[in-house]
Image (cartoon, rainbow, N blue to C red):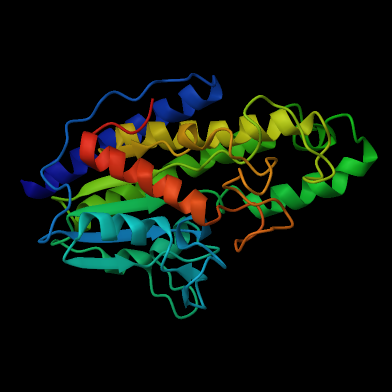
Length: 303
């Protein structure tokens, strides 16, 4: 009987995945409904596990505690753990991680899902950027910018077939994210599971800042919209897979990589503060920690 229930649940999730792809294809902005807060919100008896990629691990942010994964003890999971005063904290986030590394080792870092167990109370997951090839996208757009500095050569490149390649890739990544969340729920059935979105990387108003960030003028809004589509996908996958979405984009608007060093929370391609290019600096990690804590405390993180 239990096996039949599990099968029905998986079928239901697959049907929801089909609906997700349809929604993304139409770029429908669906507001996430408020989810009921689970029992676990941190505390001395809580166990917190953080999964994710380099936006979670915090490359080059002092103090680096894992060279293999470029993991900082001042990344947002460490800040959240300290604020909640959890009894057990496992941060297995790793730079360069994709959804595959939830099940596969990455150098000396074992499969990230191995850190999740039945006693896990809080699990944060931030993944997907590397699945869509974020680093390759940046490199491609930088290389194409000189061919049409005031135009949109990168957008034309990814839309050469008549369909935006990046939108398709984002849609294809959705089932991978859903599978990760399903695996987390299977391993930690009583945990609050938070899917963390990506912060605002480029000006939200669509303006550019070349040559500081060397993209073509009209590619700035294109790349901004691509990130928004990624975050929309994550929001929808969270909603339909019993996870809570954490919006880190909204709280970081105005602190993108085009801003001055004193204001920005995301470093440009030539960082002035300790951080990887196009990644959050220490202030950016603090901002993401605030968004996660807000969700855990108030039960509402995204709009």
